[in-house]
Image (cartoon, rainbow, N blue to C red):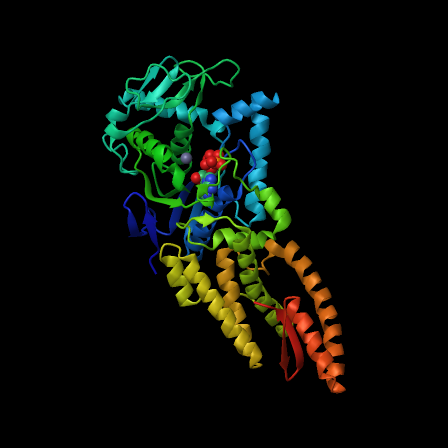
Length: 465
Ligand SMILES: Nc1ncnc2c1ncn2[C@@H]1O[C@H](COP(=O)(O)OP(=O)(O)OP(=O)(O)O)[C@@H](O)[C@H]1O
Ligand SMILES: [Zn+2]
């Protein structure tokens, strides 16, 4: 019953014990809102949405923070390029991210703080770090002195002497080239906020240490983000927070990427597939299945073929849900508990692929029960399947998918009456012993992707698996 998580910091799977019994606090590095989200971004949100749902299933009260980085070099550059205010770029893309998360069924975070709303907290943090000898101001910038913090680079297990940390534009006055900027001095034409060290704007790393402290306190349970954030972002977050006096995160969890030809899908590499485009071609619930069911530590190499596989795997589950619901003549409620094998898989570092195998096995058992006309068993399997899908956010009968399942139910009804019409013709051919016509009809239906099964109640159709 203990949840175990792979902790990047320990390089191993550890038993999860919450800081406060019955509660879990999670901080996830969210979007830098310089452009609309690609499916890699939403994968990250989705992996942590599943984590949050599992903790909730296990009875924890979850506080889930996912921040918005609404000021950054690329946002400013884009604003200049397009002759727009920097914040209009941020607001527009923040909305696009939220539409993406919502389309794929991610529950809203408890709080979603924006970096620029926390300048006061950041200044307070820098002040204390300067007082404690961990930071210094130079030419209007404020730098973190990496040599003052001996645990620096413990998360990524690098040697300071081997480290190359390139300085950004205008980052002058560093004592050591590896010191990183917490605060950047004002440059002409850029937004600024006043500080005791002159006007400027926050660096990316500082905002997360300050917001995690504000919303989760000096220690919290899980810190998440994509693998790319381990260095420098998370190392720098740790340095600032711990040197400030916080215990900070107790478990570090990193999701693997969506890749294209082996490279991380990334705005800057130009290999992005936007969520807004994907939802026009694929049902959002299928996209959720595709992005959410591989293990969160496995890369997903994007391909249309694997998306189609996800689509047909999900159709097998959904077809079962629909058939039994029809047979039951009413909506079958999800079981109160998921099967033990599913729970065991989820407890083991969120083993969604193994948990999903339990869903598919249960669907197969349910289909056998249907074939044997054992309605009671079929309904019991459906209740289990719904409970499991609910935890993964993939229950097609859940109201969050209501819009789409209504549409597919309508379509299902239309297809059903068309197929029945054709099957009636096949039955008439068989009745007059015209086997050639009956077989030809059956072959044509099979070729169109339907499986026809003769049962004592007459022929039944389903989508071919
Ligand atoms: N291809 C990807 N696969 C999985 N997670 C990703 C991918 N790209 C970004 N993420 C994660 O999404 C979250 C938000 O990312 P952020 O907005 O900082 O974009 P980014 O990493 O700069 O993306 P890009 O490289 O496209 O500019 C982070 O936790 C990041 O690690
Ligand atoms: Zn962060």
